[in-house]
Length: 549
Image 1: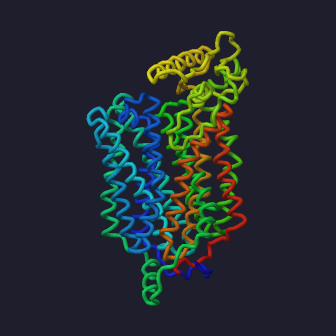
Image 2: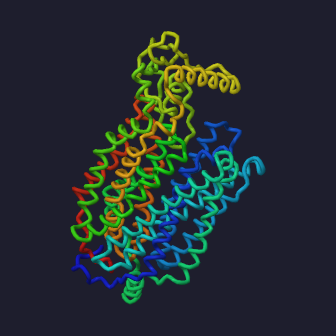
Image 3: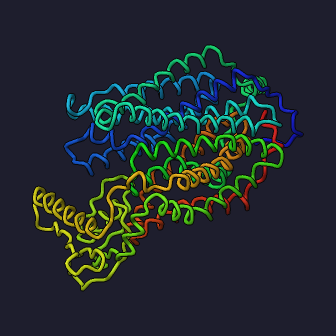
């Protein structure tokens, strides 16, 4: 366990090449992390077109989730390697594997030329990328925390988080630029490959890290002391690991992912703004927030980490619903106008409606109620529930129009081909009814209140800036040198895997059950609030901890 010491007594030193190299590593980790989230639609229909538009998107979501879920395994593997063989070679190996896997995604043939081998290869590469990112991001944080002087540790680690956020900006900007140059058709055909190929730079960086980066001074001193004493490495304190996960990492992952990932996905896939417009606004907002990552890291060196982290999580939890309500109005005013003309109702026997929680994407919610609610939730159309007579098929009433009632599909006695045809007919008829009632399927660019949208995206990124730098520093300060790499990587990556893998599915279940697009926000609100409760009660501030033990 780490011990208290006055600031400045730790033997660690700050070296410019070390910080620069680790920052570049974090930048490309952020870049690689965001690519799959941003390019899901393009990936899906290139690698599994036979599944149709919805099936291809589900496949792409599963490919993205697979890389996230495997990251805790990568954290264990690379964390143990880092604790045993050193921070520098482990970080270089993680970067090399991540860069190679991401580069090959941009080169792998599509379904049209390779058949089923194409999606299989994509899944394998995504798993390798997730495994490597499980070590690269946390490895950068640990390395810098051990190199930085105690009085500047929060600032230096916040620099790593700033670099990671800059990597997301770079990914957004690259995708936006290629989309503008290639056009929609060109981007769909070949342009989506370009951002992945850019990851070839990571391979060069990994070689430079191995050749030029000095080993962590804290790690070297710890290994020498351990060898001299002849004692084995200490085991991880599991209670401390659990408190770090719940009190810091879970809230940090939630607040971070709600900004550059979930908010942009909400704008693109739920509110149906154009991808290029979303990418441009998100890049501007995150770029404006970058200095605040450094500011709150610096502040944590002056007043402590804990209460900054707790304040950031609490502010985020309190602000999500009003912010996303305003975001919806600013980005999609057509929804508000359409609701003024008449609400959409799902009329169904409540016993026919399932809880549509499907984190693995394998369940088939195919009752008449589930089909109706699933379609509306994915289309971003708010609705209310109205109980129907028992055992009657579900239907959707659009506005007050007496003829605008579309009965859902009962697939019970239909063959697979008949079911698909019936579902397509239902979706077509319901889409026509929604269009007739004024519910737009796309948002014209001129209708979007871009200053307000950018401002809200900036606030979401600001919450991330408040939490991530101090949070990552505190994680590193909570564990001893002998197992710091494993512990930090595991808590950091497990939290992101849990939030990114399960929170969207849970949020969709809330939305599908209630018809309110904002109800899904209760999931990230609960996660952030949980971190506040656990952190306030159980965690002590670590600003004065000497990590060189």
